[in-house]
Amino acid sequence: MNDQAVQNHTPAPRLPFPPLTRSYILHCSYHHWHPRYRSITPKARLIPLTLPFLTYLRADGILLPPEPTPLDPDLSSTETDSGIFSSPSTPSSTFSSHNDDDDPPDPSLLWPDIHSKITSTISELGGNVCPKLNWSAPKDATWINATNSMECRSPNDVYLLLKSSDFITHDLEQAFDGCVDAPARSPKPAISEKDEANEDMEIPYHLTLRKTIPSFLPSCEFRCFVRTRTLLCICQRDLNYYDFLPPLVPTLRPLIITFFKKEMRETFEEENFVFDVYIPPPHKRVWLVDINPWAGRTDLLLFSWMEVLGMRGPISPRSAHGETESGGGKGEEGRESVSESGNESASENNVDGEEEEEESEDEDEDEEEIFTPEFRLVGRNDPEAYSFNTPQYSAHKMPKDVVDASGDGEAGLREFMGRWREIVKEQEEGERRDGEG
Image (cartoon, rainbow, N blue to C red; front, side):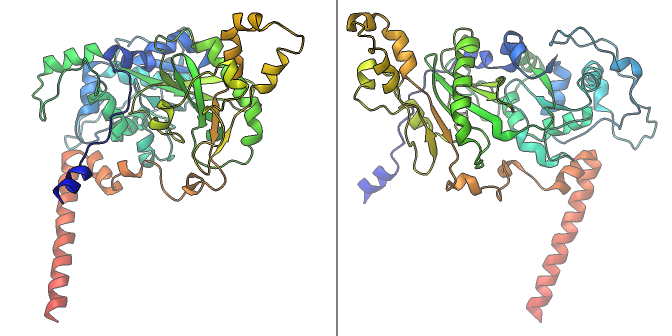
């Protein structure tokens, strides 16, 4: 009995990830790689964040600035298209004054430069943007936005998403979790303002505002996995079945392979990473959307880390003539997985009677041609294809009443708690009367 209990509590083996370092995580930060790949990414602007604004994001509750008056025409003027902005020194003049002592304080008075830059950037990018911090976008908080999406038309939309997102909290508090060179965390660390400022200096936090893509198609976004600078496999990001995707694989896969070889294989500092691309109709251009760490924190969607870490990379010419390879085929049961065979191209190399010695001289090139990354899609009968009834990121949601009360500050929360106690008291009295009757 005891032996059985010991077996049941045996920890699962650790996956063979390369050691994570803080420099590796920073290399995957949007602010780090965006300047290099700016020409192949959707239009975006980066705003360096100050300590007062980071303190606001970390604070409990959701306190928003007063509603703005019409924008000052001067704010709509654009600066040079550098992609990375410096914070202006002039405070925002877009808000009317509030003299009522009962009104909650305006939090943006502590970071007027950030508020002004967000306001002008939204205007510059057409009045509709999607926010993102260094690594994460607040996708888990879209339920609180009026559009039920990440589209933001005002600074308050941005603040509401950022402060309601667990993903953003992870960027702020746990960015270096799992790194071998990260300091150990205590359960309740007592961090002074000076220590917190030093931490934030180590991580140059930026707010990215990306121009909303008109008629964005989630079906055309794909996640790509790179190990030792080899594109190992690809899968769709949106976990719904699309009957038009399988016929497009012969078009999409060469596009992604060419994009990776030309733009990323030799230019990104790390040899292991995960990147996302968007290929809208007519499916002729690839856009880089994001770069993610090769680590357990990254969602593999249609794959598992055990599966990906166990995949074999490029095959040798000898394997192409007889041995099978795990890089393609059916993959997990029920999922459509499309791979191309390298046998025809390998046999064509010998049509003209070339010597085998000459073929071996170009072994590296042959291997590259023979290996084809697996392209995995949601199949018609997959459980994922019928997950539309389950709201995405539902584990991160909270009742809207709580959020509304939090938006009114401490007084709103007190009023909410009072109403809640009255409801509970009425329920208890009703149950007591039912018991007596």
